[in-house]
Image (cartoon, rainbow, N blue to C red; front, side, top):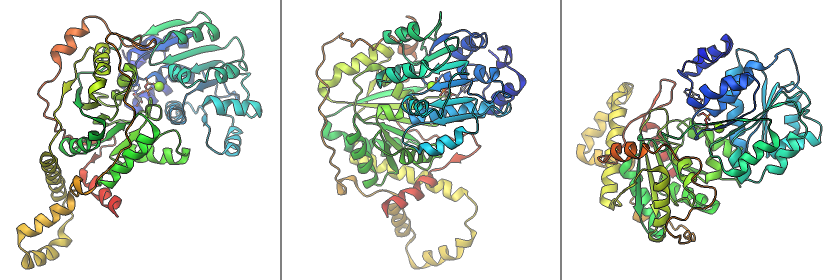
Length: 503
Ligand code: ADP
Ligand code: MG
């Protein structure tokens, strides 16, 4: 459906157009008219379906820009999500001149207090920090018209219920309350009853749950084998932009360190890093200055990063919903993606659980050999060279090139440069990853309480996914990433950075 049919005014339609949105997503199409009417709405749709704009657009529409009070508040589980939401609301509300601010923990509170003096009309924040501000009376919620609980399932998982309640209690009881979530565990409905008035429930079936756009593979390996296999796979698959998921913070640290040691342009994020550091890493990743982001589930949850070509699950998630969220980071907006999940022999039941939920069978992948990995690196170097040569600014090197060719054999010369462009053999850089306890063995058919509610699509999906899945993917993804600004990131970039890392 067109945005123009949803009852939004021109300044918003302009901002929507500028954002490049052509059509409203299903959750937007269904919830925007309800929110505009002032109803309480519970909206469930999988990650990446545009829930932010689903509540953001109608909220901005209703903001009175002559009123200096905070009129809408969005509670968000993590700093990253809060920042991302603030940015999107700011972008969408720019033409209307709506003021949007964000507050989150781990950042200087005095600075936040100073910016709050500019009278935001929409405030986005994490639960703890919002409570802080309420206690200090630096945020007042008595003019709130709309309250949003965003990524509500995650807020519950993180134990924010008390904070949320404290915040909600300071808003007027006649407010509008909206709740958005990727999954719908039963506790969320309890929140609905507690904080909302006759909420309407909108559930978008996750039909593109694990979309045909993502080729899903698994590799069976023992824990201690995984790292070497992963770096070989990276060499063979030559991904553009990759997220590696690890089960624990220690894993994330060790994996990112190991990847850097082997010459990959990688960095890790998890909850123990300073806010500053996380923001910096995320920025680099979004701008294509970082090839591999290593993350825990929580740190990466809901992050909107476009152009991710590969998701590696270094550890298989214990919860099928997490799997869906993880691989939802790729295959977005029509782009093709690859996911690869490591599974130790006794974790196979978890793999089957995931397949039961997604109704897509993962294809086994044989670990590449060291020789195949080497060939992959050379192929990637060839690509880099093609790209370097097509750039026409090499004239001033002509003379130097001729000199070199006069003194060296051309083959020796190219081989030396290829050696420089590829990584040292992995066997020369041993990396030891501390073993994690494997997931407890689990019986067939057992599900834990919370999984399995959100994503079961209609039965006919079984046909769709099983019959249409790709079988012939060769594991070589060479597409270049376009960042939406007309730039095609070439691997030249990563080549340069790789060298910086090796210094
Ligand atoms: P969710 O909260 O459901 O996980 P987001 O609100 O973060 O999803 O949106 C995911 C991405 O989709 C964002 O980059 C957002 O700008 C983009 N997006 C939102 N609505 C549309 C639309 N109608 N068409 C295209 N892209 C959209
Ligand atoms: Mg969201």
